[in-house]
Image: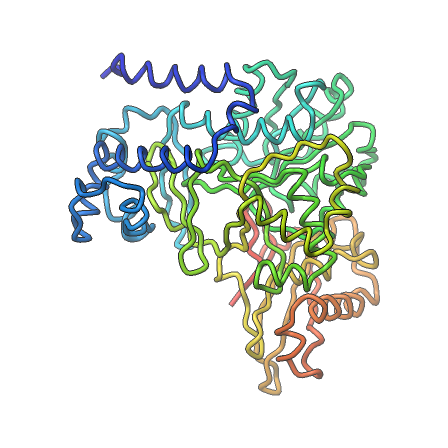
Length: 502
């Protein structure tokens, strides 16, 4: 069945909007416009998505009684179990049909059962704006010949193909951009960089943080001088520390974290929801150096991912300390509970906080004059609660451990991957065990365990007030287990790493 003229016109209009409007215009809407757009999307979903009408009725609501923004904000939360898994895929799409979509991504949650997320090319246009914001504001890619090397796995997973497609949209818009798609194959990445990068003014590697770190390290071992290629980075999928960012850039020959890196906050179900900007990176660097200030802002003893977002594209709310998002997709989302702990900060609130905390001089030093600062709201993301380990009543976060690993005394010997767990020792007392992956070219030297014990304990004491006050002094030193690179039981290659184990 062919798409109707109206359906084709809608697709063409969204593509034309992205290609024809400047980034400044695309990001010019304010909160009032975003709220109006959110309400219209909710009403459209109620009207055109059969599963959503049925879902509201099952919750005891009359779908046609939703008329105002206040009504929309009172709607029940969408959840994976209560909505996504409870209704057939086609009925969750507009018109109750998959025929308005032309591509699909697959995700697997903690159960390992695949979930399918169809979309159309028109749904990629709003996500392409996030990539344009990074490539233009951070990398100045509208002025420089740029090679983008997609290092995410290729296939039905959302990362690789979605990223490639959005980068191709940028090239179509006129950016002097070539996109290479080696996926997560280090040898092919090296071949592309060595052959093609000399033809460009800068090279952007896009991938999961631990994998990109492995690529940089393996390249150094193979004799590559990354500073020859003016390398930039786009990350997604994990929270990382500012120490990790600094060490990676040191290996790549960069000294400008705010302009050479950007992390995306994205999910298979919602697409890219927000992105780091020079402004948020500079703010995060200041907060990383002042953990007490960061704790007063975020309420926890760990540093979250901090990004800006466009509320007219993805409309965020918070419920009980977790994030809720609405947005247009092949499967439209209305108040979808993505189960990430985090919160929202308006741009003006962030500006006021930084001024009161003494962060403005630091920000100006990092950003310099003329840095692109857009007054977009911010969202901070800790990730899922089930990645936390409880030890003597203290919540121990993987982010705390990462900082302890990424110190000068050990950074050349470990990959940054680890597994955190609380175990019962032979004496019946709990112990904090950290299994650490060594670098591929490194045989664990004598004394590395002791170095890691001391640096991790020191950083836990500095960053985590619960650890500092709850854990007995004699139990603060963690047990360290060293494993070789790619150890199949703990660090299998080619899969997304999980940092905690119970």
